[in-house]
Amino acid sequence: MRIGVFGVGGVGGFFGGKLAHSGEEVAFVARGQHLIRLQTEGLRVDSIDGDFHLKKVQAADDPQTIGHVDVILVGVKAWQIPEAAQTMQLMVGHSTFVVPLQNGVEAPAQLAEVLGEDHVVGGLCRISSHKAGPGHIRHVGIEPYVAFGELNNQPSKRCQLLLEIFHKANVKAELPADIHAALWEKFTFISAVSGVGGVTRAPLGVIRSMPETRKLLILVMEEIVAVAKAHHIVLSPDLVSKTMEFIDRLPEGVQASMQRDLIAGRPSELGYQNGAVVRLGNECRVPTPINDFIYSSLLPQELKARGELKL
Image 1 (tube, rainbow, N blue to C red):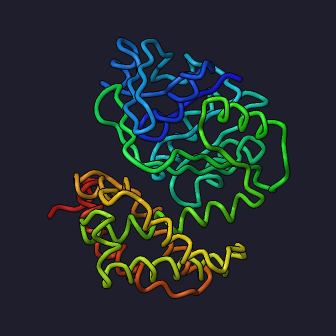
Image 2 (image 1 turned 90 degrees about the vertical axis):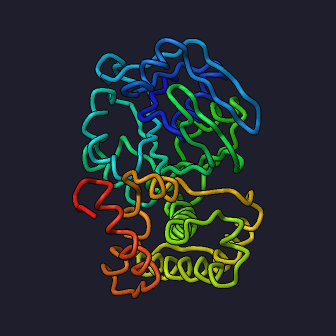
């Protein structure tokens, strides 16, 4: 199976690197200094599970030079999906399928609108990693995990084959019975830690230990569960408590990628996390006051980062 990785940040760089390290044929789409370093010195991954260095990797900034692949792992930020979908068409052949690994729940539909629903599956990942520098990825926390599945929740040979490839690379991977529920479960977690982390600027260990901010995490998640129910997504009744148990097991210094982007003054996934909760809640008339507060509070900084507002 020939694998394309579109976006070589903390997610695409790590998972694509693991697959390449296990012997799979992987082609990376990257830009700028990151691309130059990949082409000249390869890909370095520092990980709490073991470091590795791929001295030679296939990397390009033009998808046409890579050509058709069997599967594309999409590692760009959620807000970059519409543009990425247009660009990656040059890599999509008759049997190619695309696995989005973004935060949020809207990427599969956005990709399907451009590429066609037959070429898209649902997907998600869990990992705390980031681009430490050109050609350099650092995995600092959370056991790497991916989940994916057909949008109609039916089994398929292509997903089963990709599952086996991830297992060969020693990456924990699953085919959920309901990929849409799995996406909303991840959405519930990431929007809570990203939003509260973005407002407080505090690491997760502080947020979960203070009664006031711990309550905020729970309230954010409860609103998302209500919105999911209104959109006919069936979630576990104990999802919030189970997610809090997961949060309590994470390293104290964990920061979500959206939080790191906000702190650094970069464009973030605010509109696709807490902003999406508000938007999707409005669609079904479910009130989301806590997510609305978080989104509204962070919006001026987000617009500044995008060059749309001077502060």
